[in-house]
Amino acid sequence: MRTTDHAAAVVVGGSLAGLMAALGLAKFGITVTVLERSGPQPRSGAALGGAESNLHRLLGPDGLAGPEATAAALDGSRLHLQSWAQAHDLLRRAAEADPHIDLVHGARVVEAGQDATSAWARTADGAIHRGDLVVGADGHRSVVRRAVAPERPDATFAGYVIWLGIAEETELDLEAWPPGMDIFDAGTDCLLGYPLAESAPPGRRRLGWAWFDPRRNDLLRATGCVDGDVVQHSLRPADLPASLIAELDAEAAQWPAAWREAVRACLRRGGVTGTPVAEYVPDRLVRGRIALVGDAAHVSTPMTGRGFGVALTDAEVLADEVAKAVAEARADAIPAALRSYQERSLGRARELVESGQRFSRSFAG
Image (cartoon, rainbow, N blue to C red; front, side):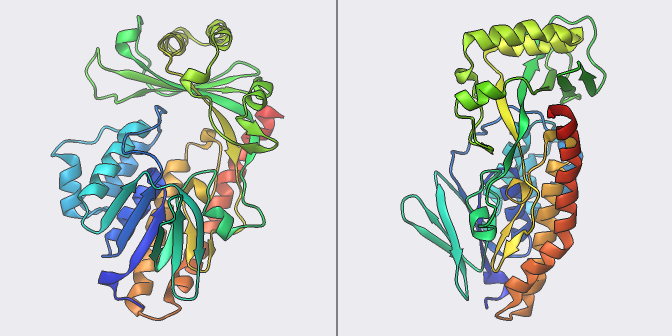
């Protein structure tokens, strides 16, 4: 077993959960290789409720990131983060500044496995990345989950799609700016909206919104977004046919003025993504030297508003248990640490998803 300064982990997935897990492990001197299939630029324009306070906790002086990484990431500025893209950018810069983290882009992991003394992830180019443990943070379609729960590897479709967008103030002509988060129920549909970066000066503010729609399941299946009970991919802005954009524009009339205009502005600009909602209640989070965090571990509807916070807690608990294990320098310390992580985390993960399922069943039937 390696000492703390030389213990190594491989994190599969460089989105929010993966970066938080990497920063948590790196805090304790563990060398981390993060394998991310995409490039360094963010892929999502979704709103992210609760990010600001959680990222203060994560990257503040007493948070997970070390002082050098924190200083480099913050550039002396205050955090005002309420979107996925902003949160990802800050976490990525903190990871890039941390000497214990190697962030590898364009690395598509196709398999994960383990033996008695190590765990590994194999990328599409045949490269094998080994460590004392592998952390699966590769989202709701996790490849690493297949190694942890091969008997039930897939999240299932919850029965509805969420249309997502962020409108710029310059696109809008509003009499009054919404003061805070709003939730509207229109019978079959539901809209969640809230201002982003509320510290921004007038003229540069933004409105994030999520429109829950159970009426497009045939479209999702016809476009291959959903195959059977498994979500395959989202509908990107370029995938939305003109007829659907026109339908959504007309249906936006059901929302109050500010949010109606925000939806229509995003539709005009081609800034709307359709994400089929997936759910996964875990029976386990670990197997041997392989652990899952974030959406790889548990997938809940965004209506819970807790996914980001629970992913952060996953990262903190995992780092805490692994740090104690590597200090013990026993051959079985890592598997034992991951079992402790599961004992501390599984109940919370299951409760998160099950609470969201109660909404999904009442909403989608």
